[in-house]
Image (cartoon, rainbow, N blue to C red; front, side, top):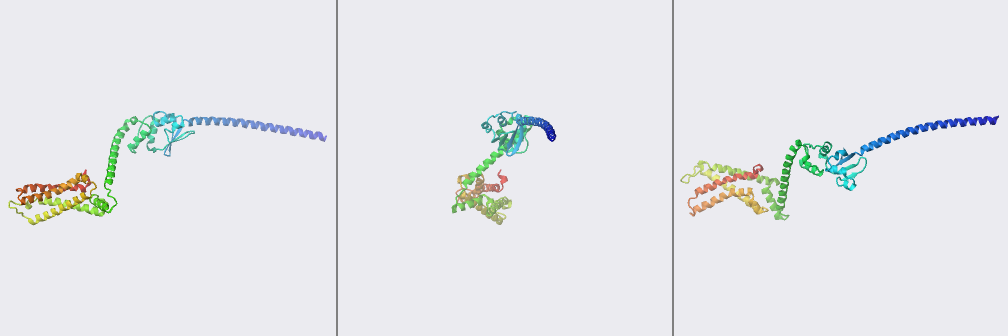
Length: 349
């Protein structure tokens, strides 16, 4: 009896275990089916997202990234970006960009300033080329050349501003380059060497030609300007009727006339010394003498010496009455006023 009871209990336990196993099997099958459905749906989404991502590319310009649709870039196949999208080998891709990282999406790196790139990118997206007013037109022109975009693609509203600005900027650039070239040539010409004579010559040249190089040069420039003003004042004063000689050679105010002549002589001697010193220390003598301002300086002092020569010839009776000729030559002293041009940069233009 006991053996039969134990067998019945074992059979009941086996039945219960079988029922539990079947229940767990049913639950596992349901979970597996649900998981398969979930992952199948997820893979479909991933494939769809991947298909979409393959249509996008990343353009990295100097660290600034732009995400663009490949179809937009292929709208202009002859541009750099259009040619890049049509490239099918790594070697060909690197012809149009500096670095390339494959992936989904791929990334193309350009070592360029991105300031003008939004206008170029917008042209690929919208099919029309507009530009902003900020930035240098010459830089924008170089960007057009780099991205292989024709300037004539620009809309009329922008081209009316762009092309005149190009001309203005190009003229300014040419002027600056010419000025820098002249400065370089001048610096080479005025290299007097490192010897003692060369240093003294350089100091004299800078003092006489460039007032901003030292305080003494500034003082000398102001003194020279003062001499020009004094010479102009005495010239105007000497034209007064009271200071003219009558038929007998007498003057109403001989003392005043003597003072004027003394001042005039002193000014001319100062101008003569200044001109001779500048001629001696000039790096290129012929170029110095051909300079417009230097020719004016020379013409300003020549009448004084011509009048002295004519007076001497008159005293020695080599020529007849030369008073009229002397007066005419003295009138040429008005040329001294043009020495003001040297001291005022605005007058030199």
